[in-house]
Length: 345
Image (tube, rainbow, N blue to C red):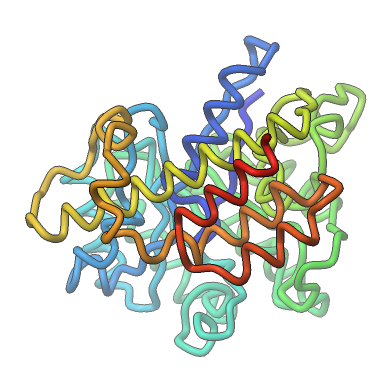
C-alpha cells in the first residue's frame, strides 16, 4: 500500500518530512507499504518572479525522494510557465507536479486561488488540460468534494472529466464549508473512483486518525480506493504510518531531533541566501552536519514555528501544560533545548 503525508503549508517542510520518513523506515514492518511525501504549497507568481523566496518550498534531499511539488495560483499562463520550468529544472528529482485547487485559507480564497478555482469549472478544466498536455512528467490535482453540499453533482462531473488529463487526483473528502469537522463523504469518493478514467489514481484525504484504521484490511474505505493520504493527524504523530507506540522518552528524543534539524535547515537556507548558491538538492548529511552553535545568530524562525510541533509532540506527557507554557514564553533556541532536556532527564 502506498501511503502519503499530505502537504501542509508551514508544516511539512524538509525537517518534518525527514523525521516522519525516518520513523517510517525504522518501524514499518510491512514490506508492501511505502511512504511518499509532498512539498509545501508554492505560488507560481513567487516562483517566477522571486524564486529565492520559495526555495524553502522546493528544497528536499535524496532521502525524501520521490517527492511531489505542489503549485497554486490563479493565472493560467503563470501556472503553465511554472510547471514547465519545474519540469525543466527538476525532472530527475521529483515524482510529479500537482495543482492545488482545495486550499480554504481566506487570503488564498480572496485572491482567486485554491478552492476558488472550483467555482469556475470551465476555466479550471482548461488550466488542467493545458498544464497536462505540455508536461512530460506526471501531473495531478488536489481538490475537495465541493464548496458546500448544494451542487456536488457538478463537482463530481468536473472531476470525472479532469481525470482524463490527470495521472492522480487527491480528494479532501469534505466541502469547504465543513472546515475541520471529522466527517467525510464516502459515497462521493467511491462514485469518483468508479466513474473516473481508469488510468487516473484516486487518493483519499481526510478522516484517518490512526495506523489501525489504515491497517484494517476489512475496511472497505481503503479497499475501494487506490491510495491513502493523512493530513492533520500526522502533525502531532509522525509515527502514524506505523504501529509503533513510543515511550515518553522516545517522544522527547524525537522532539529534540526535530527541533535541531529545523534549526539546521533554517541555517542552511540562510547560507544559500547569503552565498547565492544555486544548489538546492543537498545530501541530508550536509544539513545534519551543520554546527548550530557556530551559526546560532542565524536561527530566528525555528523557535517560533516549532511551537506547533512542540505542543503536539508533548501533548500526551503528564507535564504537557507546563511544557507548553514554557515553550510559548521563549524565542530562544537553546532555552527550548534545555526545556526538552530537563524533561528527558
